[in-house]
Image (cartoon, rainbow, N blue to C red):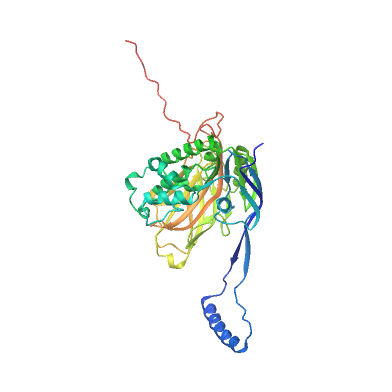
Amino acid sequence: MSRPAIEIDNLGKKYVIRHQQAALREVFTNSLSRVGRKITDLSTRRPTISNVGPKEEFWALKDINFDVAKGDRIGIIGRNGSGKSTLLKILSRITDPTEGKILIRGRVASLLEVGTGFHPELTGRENIYLNGAILGMRRSEIKHKFDEIVAFSEVEKFLDTPVKRYSSGMYVRLAFAVAAHVEPDILIIDEVLAVGDMQFQKKCMAKMKAIADSGRTIFFVSHSMSSISHFCNKGVLLDKGQIRAIGNVDQVVDNYLSFNTEEKDSINLEFYEDRTGTGAAMFTWAQICDADLRPRQLFSIGDDIVVRFRFRIQDSFCKQEVKLSLGIRNSEGLQLCNMVDSDSQFSIRGVRSTEEISISLRDIRFYPDTFAISLWIGNIHGTSYDSVEDCLNFKIVDGGKLTSRILNKNTGLIFLNPEWKRIKYEIS
């Protein structure tokens, strides 16, 4: 029996978070006081005591234990902040674990962030050699595969242009092309493929499948459950730094979906964790209702759904125009729509410190499934003030008034009932 490609034993990663609670005036006063104490200490030869403030220990990963067989395709899933990226960084030897050990057999190639291992002032051609060397390729090996890497990346026209002028999509194409042609024993890929266009994503998935079919091992992080289910044979579900489920990928995905779609027709967002943004504005509350504004979660095809939410904004931003959007994705993580306020000729100028907004979705036409709602607020230039993912859920359970036939989520995405017409046909 062959030995595992990766052995992970009691792995843990701890970070120390320092909290600064003093106001600016207190910091200035304390600094002067420390200067005075240092002068006094020099004359009296007494040791000084540094005021570093309170500290908090945060375990990004804790008690992680599992083995990976050679040739396995492992899907790592979980909410933002669950420890996925930390695990990949440890596997890539970018950071060391705080406790436990990890044994890796074979050469590792990683694609974690756009442009990792690239120098912005160097050209694409030069960065192929630089990045290939970082990933462990010999110069002769890079030279032998150079044309193949360039062809795969589709950046031949810009090969002698400094990569600082590349778009994020061009970065991804070139970075993936180099990593995929290292012929690694273990390939580690984070969510960065989401930056590329759809055609290139398909190309990458085909390349990853070819690498896996050759007996190599792949770690794949994605928020797309359909991609995870389609490509991976095993799954690991992380939650707050610990393993919640591990095993057959379909069972792990089902576990994640049931765990991630608890019934929430109303939610206090004051302390919601899965959010990003500058903090200039913050969503504080959200609710799903029917057309009569009664909170509910279960709907039928053809029903009206109303989403209500509140946000508050810092005083210094009140005079600015803000932009709002609402996104919906299904249980497999597929983004179905992203509705922006300006598309409906709605805008908020002179926003008040606290606002409540109502969005009416008329005649909903999704096939039965569970759907997650995300909210976003920012400025007209695209700067994100606050973004909360999957904060509300609703379910389409049947065809309602439109059809009595049995429907399930595999039937399709959008329900349509066009006009059917019988044409009189005469045989000449």
